[in-house]
Length: 117
Length: 112
Image 1 (cartoon, each protein chain N blue to C red):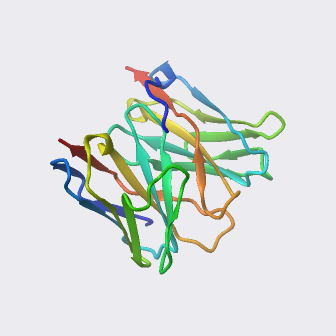
Image 2 (image 1 turned 60 degrees about the horizontal axis):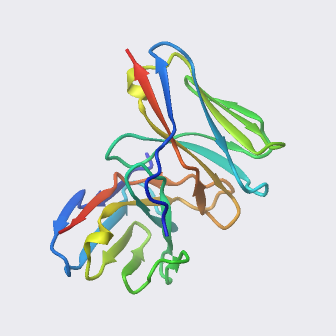
Image 3 (image 1 turned 90 degrees about the horizontal axis):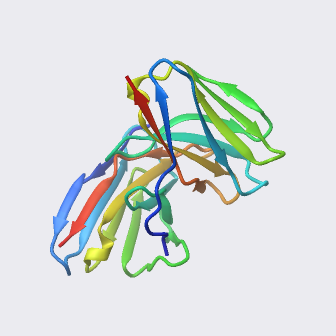
């Protein structure tokens, strides 16, 4: 149980392209989903917290107009990197929390590697 | 912005030995702690968690110890296997909704 999928797993695009990444909780409903960014040999950096049906909460320094997040249902959140540039190349990972518990473990997707040429 | 050029600390152990991975956390108000394992090119995988009102929790081949006095968390892996080779992250939560704050990570290398 508690499986989270991401699509695509790897995307290569030209500079200026917008890229959409999907995050799905396959066997549970996720009240909250999180988007992280990870550079090589570094830890996960939280970008934003996404709650179903409401606007995402972005961490300091993360441009909300650059990284558009939509959490339209309890099983799907999308991250769109608008007008991607080479510095946006990174490993993007989503996680989902079932919610409702005092200790809500986050279950992570397999990640999406974005390479911007 | 993110730090550049960090190198993960590495723990190298012999297959069959026990491994101990340490983590110092920052917020004394954190309510729970989680260890994740991340293999190259994959997302983090949940290993074990512990609440702040506990000081030890055991799972299959893994034990997590929590010392709130010095804000220290450790993960012990018994009879380490080559498949345990990965980067291990500790995370603390309970301060702001479901948000987790991740530590820097430790790379575990298991020598056959």
